[in-house]
Image (cartoon, rainbow, N blue to C red; front, side, top):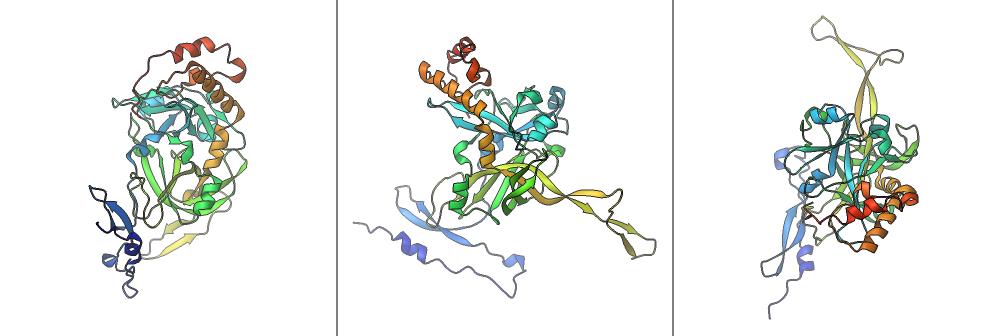
Length: 379
């Protein structure tokens, strides 16, 4: 009988990480830390491979959770360099292979700023535009978050969603000890180079700086927020922020490692960045001479953006999506699906979701939608 390799023993043979104190700033001698990772042969035999720890490969469909927001249909069609970002969240229904889909962004983008028109990519390379107004979005006045149940066709729209089970809850944050120093990235819209007539989301990287503390939002209310060391700018408001922790693992694999498990969670929604007032420099005619004008305290000044951004935690996004009105809508559509017994592998159309108090009045429209022929799910 073949002796099974003692994986614990192999893990214990990990060599010490080399650190050259004398040449610690010599980058050509930089070495990545390594960690053991269980691999399997084609016949299923386990073996140990030492892999470098670093930035993992981002799952390809992560970019497809992002959508763009504009102030008008014309702006969306032309790809005008103004607006914001958003993303999609999904919640399972009581019937298998059905999901409720929500578009999520900031209140100050879709409602206060009027950038409520949503644009999403199509599989054929074009874009589809949802000409909505500020009044079409749901929000809780306590938070700079706006959501909208949305009808998406999986055969037409190129999209992905952040499932609710991926949200970083308070309990999960505490259990995994996620906090300052952990790596994050956000997916959103770089308005100067955002794809033009179609969405081409960009990714920005950083680290958590502080645990959630009370910060004033654009709506004038204080809310617990993560401070994140990550550069942003106008256009990224409403972007989803993900936190990851990896032990030399590709996030697309989803396998446990010998020493720990990778974390990949939705941390929250980006909504603002701390500003800075910069001193105004002035060169004099004498070569080499330079004087600095004191920081302006009364009058005009140069205002820039710091490298410290703000994100509302995932549990606040969940709280808005679970507001009574939206929750009653989901319960109503779930009851209809269960009663009808249909298994249409499609997200629930927002036009099909009745208000709790008007469910009976819209039953006819709902029945027509539920009797629609199934379409293959591609997202």
